[in-house]
Length: 358
Image (cartoon, rainbow, N blue to C red):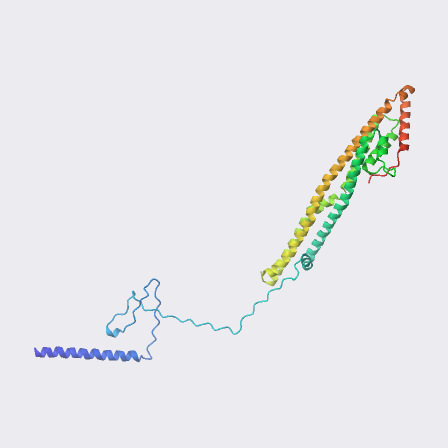
């Protein structure tokens, strides 16, 4: 029994000494690592969703198992190097300066030569529009007022001779389109004194219609230019706008920048051409419509005057046919023609000289 106990004690003592020796050797190896041993790689970062509690690393010599995947080691905090400050801050690129004067005159002076030509043409068209408006308004107003007065006097007269005396002015001359109508009727009556009354009426109606048409054409002269300006000015301004925007895009491609300071001046100059086109077109269309209505009213006055002249002529011819002295004295139409010729000659002598319609 004593020998067994001694063997057990000796074996335990050997194991204890061996363990102590191994532990001392391991601690010495940890404190002084070998140069040939490679550096231990940094631990991998914890997977997302893993618990953040980590156990410290232990030595395998003591018989403790390494930490499991459920408790990974704490990841090492990587220190990112701070960027070194630049030696010299980069200077910002110089932006193109916008024009100092963005007024209409300044944009006109800075525009392309084609856009300038378009603007000048549209401005001239606008001046022509207002000139025609001023001249035609004075002419049309004066003619309508004179035709209205002459028509009232014509309707109050008893015969063509009385109407001619009432329409004649201070100088003894019949002015205006109504005066021309009345003069044409008297001339035809004089020239056809020995002809049939129906033929006289027909020829007088033809002469009056020609005078009306001529007066209407004279009054409408110049309004066709207003129609042309009103219909073409917007498209001319649009051409200037398209040309200016095209030049702006060319400048953008050459400058290699889309900065608003580069784009805005060219587009503003292009849009100015469209604005001038609208300024020239809108008044031209309005003035043309006003003149068209006024000229239609003027022609209606002339038509009323022609109808009134034909009525006076018909009454005068009928009075000549119903004169009892002429019918009793002459067996036939010789005396009637003589009376008609005598009255026409007396009326022509009593009438003042005429001037053509203005």
